[in-house]
Length: 379
Image 1 (tube, rainbow, N blue to C red):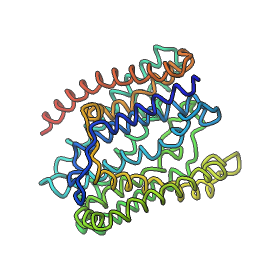
Image 2 (cartoon, helix red, strand yellow):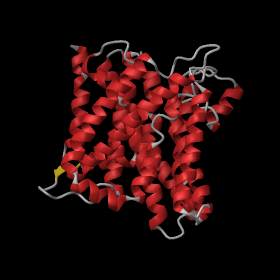
Image 3 (spheres, rainbow, N blue to C red):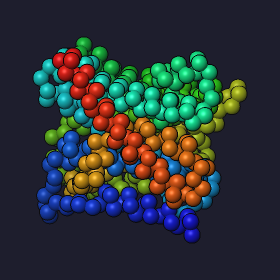
């Protein structure tokens, strides 16, 4: 009965997405399906869905305990993170080609929008952890508060985005031919992927917060590059998609289902965690990645195809979109310290959502103020 009650959160997530959705008329499409306002709402949805994913992982011990239908959320985190990477890559390249002298003030304008939320949430997370009894040496405190080791391992996304932004800036500022620039960007990402794969997992820190150690550092990253490609060829791709929509959408759905099933098989039978002393498991990691990454790509592109016909948007999605980064970065503090303290799973979920959204909103307002001050000062 308790497990069935958690089904409410799946229904709530579906209602959040579908409430206020609009369907295009027959033969028509929404041309603004990739606009910033739409993307922000989808990122807000992805943030709360990722929270449900993390909550589910905790109460099921990563799928080891049956908690009913909510268990389907165990395997969706990488898909939703792929959406964040896609919109980051898409928005970055689109700004580059549409805004005059975009790279001229890139470091002063773009980096604060991700670094300030990172350091504010990281500071809050570290200090709250210390207050709530997390034991750390002075040296560890320095590593955690600076983000050189991530006490909240879910903050890896921002670290990687900063690397991708810096690579984009250096490459597109110095390589004038677009094909060559895209090739360099792909090369950088390949090096980053392979390097992370070879680093394996972090066994030194309990929080598993060492940079680039773990498959989550590379199994959705390539959506950033896909986003850049879509932005570069947007007009041609949209025309092609409209002409063949009735074929592409069902094909994408079927292909994703097959790739997702293949991914689950690989995770269970091959996987990223086959390493042990004397055997790093590189081949297993690579094979699993080669199946999982296409599944993430197909999921995101198929979902975007759907948004050409069905536009998702409402006030709650808009609100969540504004605080999406802060919500993504801070909610884990409530998961870690309420798990076990709140015995009932349903109320545990509720408390994490209430606390996460409330704290994220407060941090977001501070971030917005500080970003405006920093960017206006450096303008």
